[in-house]
Length: 224
Image 1 (cartoon, rainbow, N blue to C red):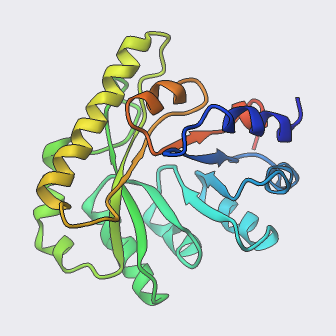
Image 2 (image 1 turned 60 degrees about the vertical axis):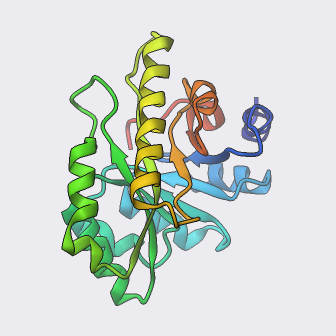
């Protein structure tokens, strides 16, 4: 199937409460343009320089989401245009995003990334670390970031019960943070979970943002 057809197939499975992020990392701009021409406007990248380069040549009404592990020295490349950073996993990273956003006169939406999988290779906070971040004086003084929700990646496994439990755990974390820290914030509403292999389970467990790449664009090109 073409990218247009695969995109339509994925979109047909989404409820109105869940938005699709087309994960376009390693894909050429021609593939992104095909998805754009088919109506997709939200794209996710995991490398700052690649995202910057694609932003420069693609239509300017694209909403760019950064979904990978963000190095502090690369923040400056995406701050001028990024719509949402999914992968905030430390106070230090949040401080650097705030600093770079201030230089551009922007307030950048961010998600707190939680480690919900059993694999040690994945990044993310635990609940205690998140509370320490949110209770810190440094966070309270930040004026150029806005935390709008949470993100997590489930274990890569065929055990759907395990995946469902991990997604349910992230939804519980979201609910606890919402009640304790963001009860008065209408913008704290996003739960970013679910990828090509497990996004349907994620939707059932409350995902508002699914990050789907290979089901739209085909297998990732690891040579890039």
